[in-house]
Amino acid sequence: MYFHRVEKPDRIYLIGMMGSGKSTVSQSLARQVGMQAVDLDREIEQSSGKSISQIFIEDGEKAFRVMERDALRATINLHQVVIACGGGTPCHWEGAAFMHRHGTMIYLRATIETLLSRLNDDSTSRPLLNPDNHAALDSLLAARSQVYESAQVIVQVDGRSVDDIVSEICRQLDLA
Image (tube, rainbow, N blue to C red; front, side):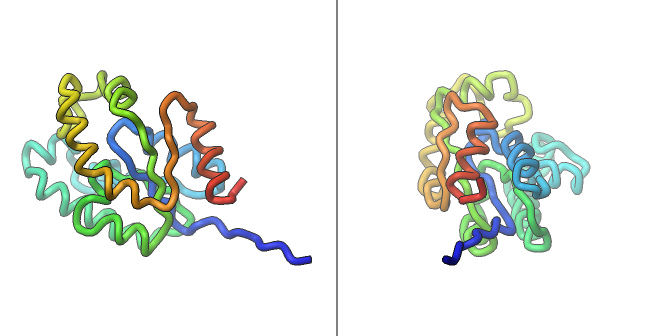
């Protein structure tokens, strides 16, 4: 009798809206499966010497998206890594296609209500978000939804603990 041993993906890309838990889940998932965790926004901040908000204010969204594209493309040199992507990463510069070619894309799906409750205290560091504007967040999610839904794995995160989300990802990737 032969058993098929499933290899863990070389690169796991976590995608979803701001506030869906990508940064937190990436750390926990990486620990759980023995991989490294990388946060693209932190990488951009470190390489530019500016916060994401500063980049948007001083250089504009287009400049940020170029930095984001470059940071995403640089992940090709990383192995055994869980990558927390910015909310717009898969939606610009063919980011989703890159992730599909070079790793496994996991969408952390959350309702608008969950996102708003998580982001309410963090609006100053979220340049595309006014936490009081439910319609703007809903519109942004609607615009990105088709790309997000193209992920190989989709995990609903509403009302779930980080451990539960990580367990679900491991189950869906057959890493448990």
